[in-house]
Length: 92
Image 1 (cartoon, rainbow, N blue to C red):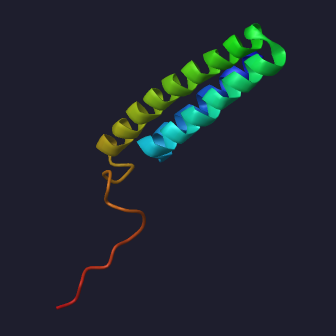
Image 2 (cartoon, one colour):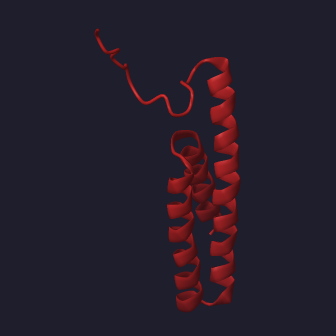
Image 3 (cartoon, rainbow, N blue to C red):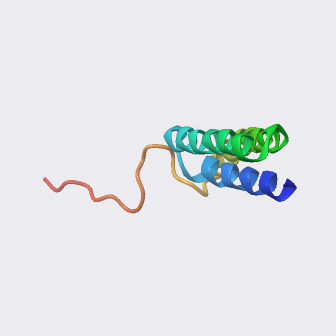
């Protein structure tokens, strides 16, 4: 079950770097449903392991958000909200 926690941490880390808060909220909702399903099917112990995975998703997201801000300040990523790819300026 510990591999599940590592996978959820990595998913949160990638989500934190690439996506915004809305995606995290969707991911947290999916993992919360997973926690409830695990507890219902396999008992409280499995549900608690799944809850630990939810915590690792949150920690991964915070780490990913921090990594994104570091990469933006270093100039490797564009500022938030600037869009992806080149933009064309309007011609007058």
